[in-house]
Length: 234
Image: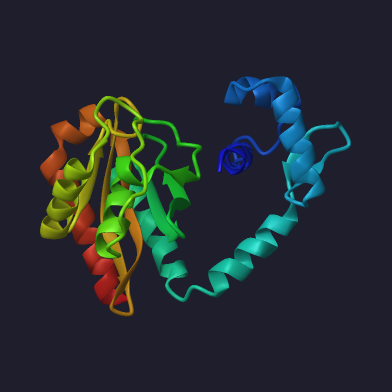
């Protein structure tokens, strides 16, 4: 999983604002040794996920777009969910996300950031289930039990008793939040996304813990209203 996470972090560094990276700049950005960055860039290029430019830098390969199209075509609910993420980011002025379950792993499948969001876009693709609102939502609704607990911060859940209490609360309230449990100074609020009478994803917003705690009630109600409206229309 560690190697997959490093590869995911490298792929996640490419964006519309930063479509091209050299080894030195990427290593500094991700705070990894140059040799590590070079090895992963070379491996991802050989696998077809990246391509080298004539200047010796790296860009995402069109092979990724083809793979993404094949994946989303198999998910009939995905286009509506993507539009919902855009709306959440715009109306809440935050980072908005959609996470899905891949085995026991929580995967951030979509993220969008409003220009005025008070945090940067997270790079992690695989997220700690017990320290994130998405993990709490998906595990609670699918009745999964964590094998381990991720002690990301001092606020993270680290015992089975704490987890049982948290899951019961998520089921009762219909939403989950993570206040500085994953990233210090940040909060995520997640709600279940339903399709065909089942929960297929967790959708929500991420922002500074300071803003969330200051505007908690209004942010929570806005997210719940937007998602409920989208599900009714879908």
